[in-house]
Amino acid sequence: MSDTSAPPATRIEPPVTEEAEGFWDATRRRELVLPWCGHCRRAFWYPRPVCPSCLSPDVGWKPASGRGQVHAVSVMYRPANPTMAGRVPYAVALVDLDEGVRVMSNVVGIEASEVKVGMDVAVTWEPMSDGRNLPLFAPDARTP
Amino acid sequence: MSADTIRGKAAIAGVADAASPTGDLELHGRALEAAMVREALDDAGLGPGDVDGLFAAGEAMGLAEFLGMRPRWLDSTMTGGSSFEFHVQHAATAIALGLCDVAVSVYASTPHSDGKRAAAARASGGGGPGGGGPAGFGGGPGGAWRPPGPYPAMAWEMPYGLRMPIGAYALAASRHMSEFGSTAEQLAQIAVSTREWATRNPRARFQQPLTVDEVLASELICSPLHKLDCCLRTDGAGAFVMTSAERARDLAKPPVYVLGAGSGVSHSIISQMPDLTTTATTVSGPIAFEMAGIDHGDVDLLMLYDSFTITTLLLVEDLGFCKKGEGGSFVEDGKLGPGGSLPTNTNGGGLSYTHPGMYGMFLVVEAARQLRGEAGDRQLPRCDVAVASGSGGVLSAMSTCVLGSEAAL
Image (tube, rainbow over all chains, first blue to last red; front, side, top):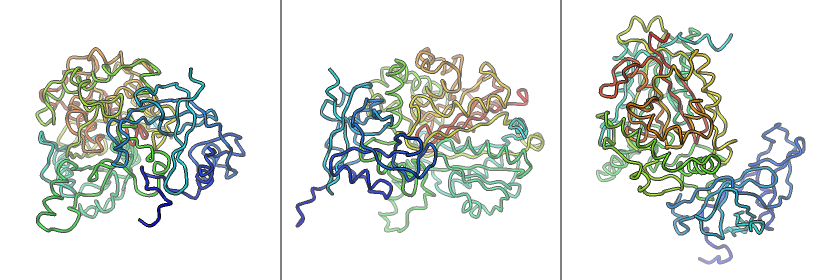
């Protein structure tokens, strides 16, 4: 391989869709942003060109705290696909962000089986092969 | 016009299904679909020339051409496993309005034998994909459940390695356990009760009794769900014929009346489910029950989608047989099994009878057989009202049918 600047993908990397370019650009700076409806004055998830509550096209991006709580969690003892085989067992969680949206992610930095519903978590970043960073979550200092 | 106008207007007049203890069927693709259509029409005492409404969970136009049919009502509603409960609702509506007279819905999927057929084709140097029919939810080789086209799960779920579909249900189970204290043992009891019914079905994939300990000792795949919390992966097929109540009375078998039908859709991908422990069956169920004019005590048979044990648990709650959150303690005494107070999934369910990917067809077929008194060793002593409640996608598209005998009409 001649190009050594791009590390190989270690998981299935998300495509960059037109409506999510702003989200992925921010991840290059390790910033978590959320789609925001200017009409409803609140965040929504996932990124789309109109607000899923009011269908207003007046949508943009707002920085998020990166903090939230585990809403539900499942530990994968079998990988979803071969790219994840080396990570087994790993925790897939739905995380309720402080901004009121629920996102899927992995909780890392702790034994997978120790991830519990209600646990406080904060965003952490995993580099992708194209300079983007994938938002993951780790236990937050708020947890004693 | 109020929705209650379809009550008792349409009936299921013929049914068929195919499954085998080996998990394999000989036919596949369109040939298997055609066999099911023919068998269901035979069961009704009707012929292909009588059919003017055709239903398939996918592309129905090509199927119509293949079957030599020229329907005036075509329905390709595809909501995954619940497609066939939607079909009952839609067909009953069309029949009640006089927009079609004889409707057929059909399904065939052979994931268990597709791989062997493909290998045989490769060994013989034969080309082509093997003609396994249109890929469906969970029906394609490899079992990947992925609707066509760009879809949000690619960006917002797949990178995190949630094993599908089991992982989606595992998240729902996780939330149910933490919110309500339900247990792995209670979920396992659902598999055990369902297996008890399967011991009475000579076509069931698994017919040996099962224990809670065996479920808990089976491989933990995606916590909290074990291998034996999961449905099978088998070949299977089925069809049903519907017509007007009036015409059904002149046909070969006792009519199975559609007393009520309702649907509800809350999301497509699991991370968008508004409440992980409450499905849109809370919408579909009350519509169907009210239309049918029944209470919970009137229900003799429950046919509940059981892709995973948690699916059944959520449906029992969402149909209102117990309070939200109390499903675990409700089922743990085995009341869903033989001799229990709420017979559920008497064919052995998707957990032990058959599950080719979109199981909802078998809910309707078994309900019809029980209502007609044709269920053999597992026949309920009294069965006049049956509820078939399907789940499609990942607890996404829910549809409930109340079916009844002449006595319930």
